Amino acid sequence: IAGITQAPTSQILAAGRRMTLRCTQDMRHNAMYWYRQDLGLGLRLIHYSNTAGTTGKGEVPDGYSVSRANTDDFPLTLASAVPSQTSVYFCASSDGLENNEQFFGPGTRLTVL
Amino acid sequence: GQNIDQPTEMTATEGAIVQINCTYQTSGFNGLFWYQQHAGEAPTFLSYNVLDGLEEKGRFSSFLSRSKGYSYLLLKELQMKDSASYLCAVRDSNYQLIWGAGTKLIIKP
Image (cartoon, rainbow over all chains, first blue to last red; front, side, top):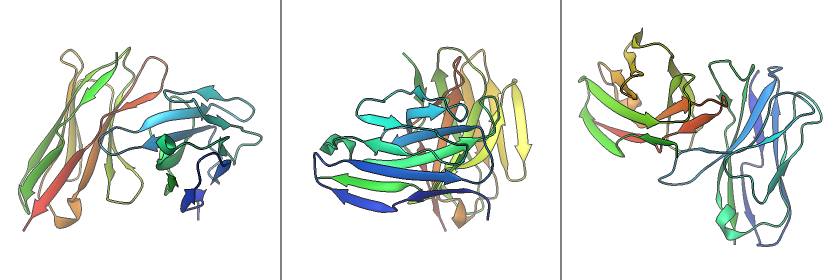
């Protein structure tokens, strides 16, 4: 079934630990995105990738890193988690920067204690 | 700065019509999007406007006025399953989406 998968579904993490959130899409979309969603705030872009091999910083990139080794995968890494990174994280993809629609994964609920 | 404003919460009755407004101030404009998000789920695409006017898609319509920095989403013949948050997003000059905080729509029988 075509779409985007994210793993894990949820995670509780101790502050200071390293964590990688996984995102895989099988739609052969060029562009991929990582957002965080916090109560009372809109989705905020963390990092994005226009195509395999390239990445860019979004609105709130500090404390996060990404890589895009191939078209399908776009992992997000928290090098040393802090409680302010407690959030719901959504991965999304689109066929290109100018394509109308972004498709979202089911999200990862991360709690940092 | 960039800003998207929409009401936090609205309540409507099953079978009725509701209009959710969105105003925006962004650096550049390359289209406005509406997404629906049910509680605990991912956002899903509803509509896209890049030119002024009304776009109709079944029970849902979206309107855009670029000169006023204003859009609305119109939902007709409301059903209980329409209870969700509705997110307004503007694509800016860098082709990144700037998102509003969303409007939680509560449908009552």
